[in-house]
Length: 507
Image 1 (spheres, rainbow, N blue to C red):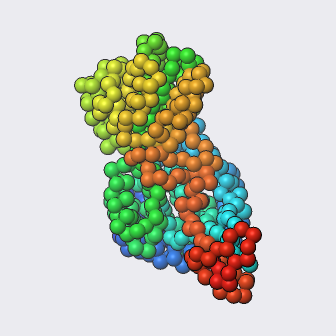
Image 2: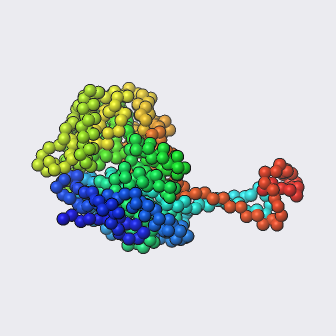
Image 3: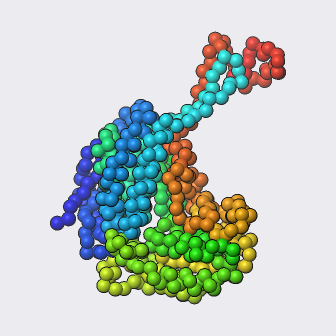
């Protein structure tokens, strides 16, 4: 009998009010039942909101350096349990152990970075335009934050959202993707062990259309951070706009790697293999388009096909595996549908089928797939597939490459391989993306820099780095007048430089 897991609300592990549960199975081995997790409902979210409100009243009064010290402890505990958590994440998400170790390390880095920000929640002290008056700004927490996270980075993305929110003095309610409930459960256990006060962190498991919707629509949650598809993000944005909520959206991508004829082709080949097929293409930053200059196109495609054909698929805990499964059957069916579309839009150079073999028959495996002669503007060149499918596009000069990169509705990541410093800096300036790499693949964000995109990838906010702390806090301005007299605001009575102001001064 599989273990039944619980929600974490108000400092206690509790059963869902619905009494219902969903299965969590290994995507590489569907016969492996990891456990049963709560299929919670709106009553569970209501209960979490009440607990989070109480927790917020205590936590917001805790000095920020003290909040940071607790997150430092969380980082230490994550470090001690890194391999254990990585193995659990591989079992429920499917990517290789090397990748999930990196996923957990990202959480560790985020914890330590957040800890230092406890002493760096800077405001500004500026001169007042009036005599005997002090002017300054400072950061304040907002309240209860609802965090909705995806399956592909079961530790990194929850920590990207949670740790800055907590450091700023907010309480949180997190709903992880139903495909990966175990990793966030382990994270919350660590927060409990570190001594997080009751109600400050709340975990409610469930389906997106049930628990996720309840969090977004709840009037007691003024802040929402969502990572997922652009289609769902559009719905979330509409609801939050109508309710005047603060919202951060991190959504889709259709990222291109551009290879110029002067590039180090060996390096560029390594980059596209990792960018396109790492995490089985299930990254919002995945390299889903490869733009090749016509002078090196044929040679590069030939080498790419041979290298991609040799990638080993399998269970991510096996040491020599390079590509794991897709997360579920619906994802595999979506990839199959796009392969069918692609066969009418380009030439299938590799793959295009479910991966077979004794070790693969119980999982959601799909062969690394490459289409060549793909035309800009076609569906497989512009729509997010979220799987191991790469579209190769030929171009004639750098201006055409930049134009092709920018034509899609997304704007998350981009990459250019070149030895030309002028092309490098032009790419940084002209590629319409939130992130551009030079001589590196489109994946590889670092915890201490802002992460996010433009156009239909996001709504202007960033995760990671210093900017995320501005999202999870409000600016308050304070004035202190010690003149002992009324200094009236916005009155045009300034006497001019070097002269005494009239008695009725501007504030």
